[in-house]
Length: 387
Image (cartoon, rainbow, N blue to C red; front, side):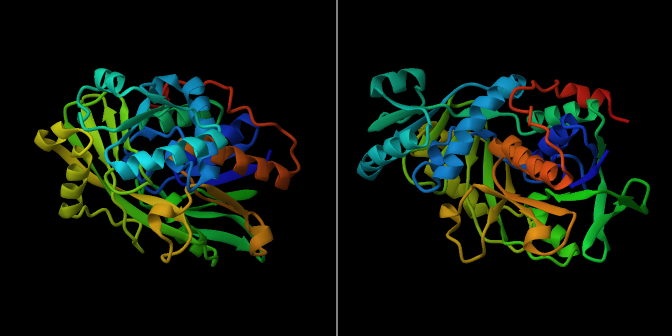
């Protein structure tokens, strides 16, 4: 049985551990901190319909639409299937609507126009100044429960999940990766773990991990701020009907309301400082859609670091949210190392499927993916089985 080592305990690592375990691999996953303590556990909780990306990133839009439907089926306990609205405030928004509808239909993203009176009935907190409204299949996802369902199911299938275990080195024999060196922060010891394939699924930290093997990756850490307000101000996800930008997403999460997001360049994926001016801008921009935001109390503000593909010269708002899977035997003449970069929380399962397919090809296995139909265990089972 081939042993696959996964570096990174976020959503992609969780889904990959699940996928590979179902296909019969021995799996060991290492996360330097607590599980989902990086980008996965910090996002705003929007399960994308794909509409946000349909115009400028159709590949990501199609992937989001497909995964949205799959995740609703395999992990309903982590998702509030509340739907979403795109609202136009000014003439430019209205003009953009036709372009968005056309591209959504090309990308198989469900979208439909609804009457303004109906929109204000189902979401009375919306500004009465709305000019046009589209309904989409956005949803609210629990940023922790969903990946923990993948982890719980993977562990039940035999995967070994190691928290607070930092990979500090890549073991090599010539041009072949043979394993990893791990720092166990709980016991303060270092040890080596051998494996047949090592997968770099470290998200915004993937460039640092590949650097351990002397391989550069074209990845841009891109932090963004989010604000949580006290009180649930809407029932649906609210989006501004324009090209993706700052302060154009409102996500209801239980009894809070999450506003997102800003974006900036960073060379340090561990930089979590939140600029106070970003908080002010997010509140002001989202209040144009839902005026009661101006008077709501701030519960918290934080940032998450997007793992964008590309370089610092990229227009961050227009950067692709698609993903890539690299076999470094092909790209860098280093056998035994695979990297998966980019993507979104919505596409964690499909990222894992493509990576697992590649590993099957590398190891001579012909085992189909089952994760699109296999329902996940309850997230609570992860804690009950934790050693």
